[in-house]
Amino acid sequence: MKKDIDNCYLDINEYTNALDYLSKTKEFLHKFDDPLRWKWCTIALTNALYGFMICALNPGDYARVIDFSRMPKKDKKEYKQLLSTNGTKDYFKSLKIKDKFLHSKNAILISFKEALHRIILGKHKFYTISRDVNLTDSEKNNVEELRSIFRNTFEHYKPLLWSIEKLYFIPLFNDTINTIEKVINCGNFIQTRVNLEECNSLVNEIKLLIEENAKKLRI
Image (cartoon, rainbow, N blue to C red):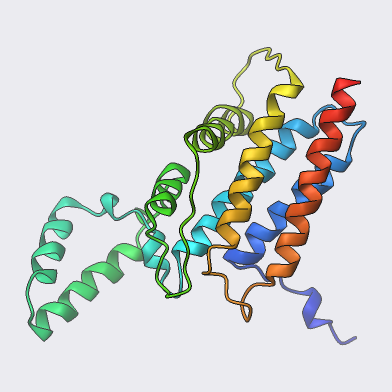
C-alpha cells in the first residue's frame, strides 16, 4: 500500500510555529468551562509573541537570533579580531568560526527579553518598509510580567499552591495581543511568506475572546 507522503512528516518553521501558538490561544480562550485555560492561554500567547519577534528579527539569516555571548571566549576574541580586518582570508576564517559555533550545543536562541529589547530598539528594521514597534512603558511591563512571572512559573512549576485573581490576567493578555499585532504589522512579514490577513484575523478574534472572558468574570 502506497504511503501518503504528506502524512509522514511534521513540517514546521519559525512562522508556522508562532502561528500555531496564536491559534492555540484562540482555542483555549473558547474553553469557558475549563478553569486552567488561563494557564494555557498565558503559555500560548507569550510563546506566540516570542515566535513572531524571532520571525521579525530573522529575515533570511537565523544567526541574527542566536545568542553569540555564549561563544567560547577564545573563539569570540579571534572572531572579533578577524571581523575588524578587511582581508578576504580573514573574512573566510571568521565565517568558519561562526559556523563552528552555530553548529555547537552553545548556540541557542536569544531570550524573550532580549528579543523584545531588540524589537523596541528597532533592530528588526532591515527593509525600507519596516516600521517601529512602539510600546508604552505599561505595555512593556505587562508583556514582561506575563512572560517572566506567569508563563515561566507555569512552565517550570515547583510545588506550591498559587491563587491568582483571574481578572488580573486581562490587561496582561490585552497588552500582549496588542504587541503581537504591532510586531506582525511591522513591515517585515512580506505577503509571499506570511498570510497577514490570517494573522490579523486571529488577533481580532482573540481580542474579542479576551473581552468575552472578562465580561463573564464581571457578571
